[in-house]
Image (cartoon, rainbow, N blue to C red; front, side, top):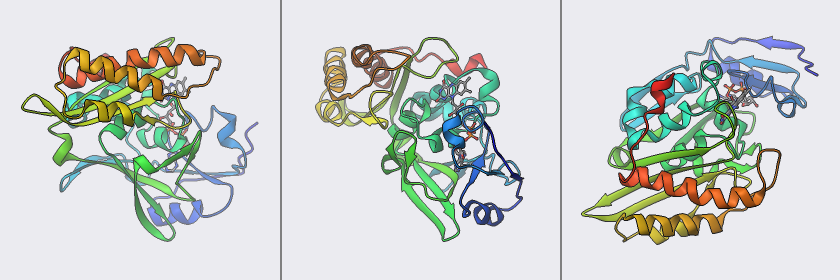
Length: 291
Ligand SMILES: Cc1cc2nc3c(=O)[nH]c(=O)nc-3n(C[C@H](O)[C@H](O)[C@H](O)COP(=O)(O)OP(=O)(O)OC[C@H]3O[C@@H](n4cnc5c(N)ncnc54)[C@H](O)[C@@H]3O)c2cc1C
């Protein structure tokens, strides 16, 4: 049962972080996890609404694409820059998250902050080498997303606000990317998801990122599969072999959505389909057009 004793709606970041420094105080962004999942409410007595902090931006800063903590999934999915980056891998992840009404309020930063292994956008952000900008009473620090997740629902975040997520544009602009989600219904969390990014120079893969969701306690970077791709040409056969290596790296659990065995087997399917998109061997479905 909800037991909220205070609702705060600060208008400055310093006011917000001062409130968050108190025990039992949590950010509320879209509220689609916080108000729905009782796990997030344990020990939460006060909420800090971040809607009036002016963080609903997506903008360039030098060579970064900066996505503020107030940017919703819909905003991200529809943003031309997100759609153009690495075949729109992040826009795809955001567009396939839940239903239109959830995407209208759920934020990208909230999806990261929840740190669920099955979340849709962390794999896409990871293959884009994203960073998390955390603000607390001690100031600001930047954590590579790669180091952010520490376990199911756990992260490197202390009593801090995720102010924004940042994606480096110098390398990502040249990458191919892909995202594939296996799920029961269009509104459901992933059974398995996969995101990939590849850099191909003169027909040879010079950089490969492959991340699988819902198959390990945190989004899984399939490092052996990535290594197997380096120096290879992006052929169907090479991608298939890498997807099979990635499958063998997974450590899935069984739950109400799928058995561990089903997850393990379908992780190779998701990985291959994401890699095909990244290599330009499969048509990228512009899922963000569906609203
Ligand atoms: C019906 C339904 C379907 C869903 N389907 C999917 C799906 O398909 N894929 C998927 O990935 N998710 C899905 N979700 C989960 C949810 O919508 C997402 O995780 C969403 O992105 C959470 O964002 P939010 O803004 O609503 O976060 P909130 O619920 O407001 O917050 C979630 C958690 O993050 C913290 N938090 C939020 N923002 C910040 C911040 N800026 N700084 C620090 N902490 C913060 C909160 O304190 C809380 O602990 C679904 C949820 C529902 C209800």
